[in-house]
Image (cartoon, rainbow, N blue to C red; front, top):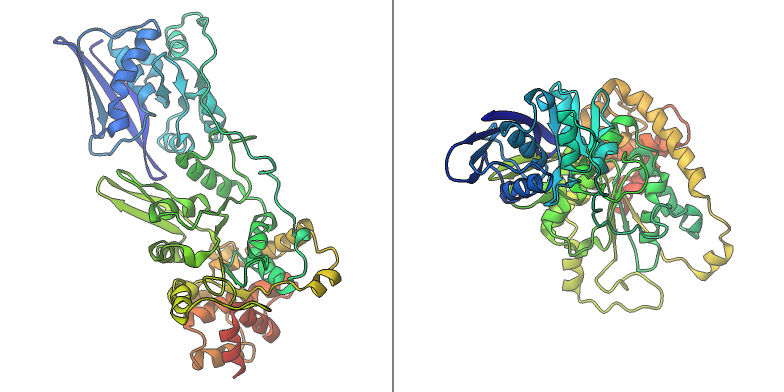
Length: 518
């Protein structure tokens, strides 16, 4: 059979496109030509496929082989096309019957020995295949559990190309050795156990701010001297968040699949807990926001989707990195444009920032003398720009814990108790916001706050005063109203009162509270 076809899936961001792999074998000098906008790693598939076929007992004919990836205008990246290219080529060579593989999508990388190795992006690829009406997929055995998360699709996991060839030909299963295992770094001890809130001594105001941020999915800034407990508190935020629902879990798992974060993951392939990302302050824009050459890949903000993105020592990050967070904070999505394509990644995360008062950290403290010049302080503070901070709902100052506070502090509330209050508040908010297509108070927008959820004038009097004096922008007013609804949900009130708005103003920061009191 000189011409044959097989199916694969090309990913651009999280969006999958069905790709038809066409193989043609014609007379001429031996050659293997691959066309259809392949990248460098995919262009090398011709050598992997030829060697894998030979070592699987079905060598390709010494003729001119042309493989086309259609549609030819769609950029194709990665090694996941290897298996489809091999199936199409072997079918064109008459090794495989055409009807056996015509209606199945094939995903997987081939080793030179004929082994089928795991690839990234299996979940979104199988989701795209299911949406296109494909009911059968063949994937590496290592990713079969991930592919099986998509309902209504029959998943076949294979370890060797020879195993798949025998199945399609109806031959008895061959005696094959164990497929070589890819190296996966061992999990860090205790990496799956969330730290407990009971470990935090004192810090009642900061603990309450963390609880409000968790209950309403609000962004949070904690400023204060080194050693006050900012990083310790931030690390405990994911433990306060409820498990992801089924839709959110599939969405988060798809992002992590494309990013390659599922390889070597212990337990089920489905990510059910909110993710936590804490990039180092030397991270580049591409690593935090996403990017790279060719089709852009997800960064830390997308891997933190439906979870927490923590920037410790936030003023030490590059200004370009911090300012690039503005768009995803507002829209919950990243659209990355490159010459070879545009990728969309979800990025609805909780941003948590931690900052010292100055570069040396001693501008606020007892018995410590700041060594920073006024210019250094201004430059350090200016790294967190006004437009960025205006998008951060909760802004609290974390004081250093004194010896007396340590002596007086008893056992703090454990994470389980605080998480139960957070879950109850989120459930109340979800019921109230369901008619508007929202889940949490952190997603509320101005039109809704000034429309269906408008509060009486006496309740918002302090807010109006702060807006009039310039202590709050109109966006800041909306942020305070969001917080007020979360504070009311935590105490079980049907709607915020003036005290709730006052507490929200205090959580918003000292400047806003002072403007309201003036």
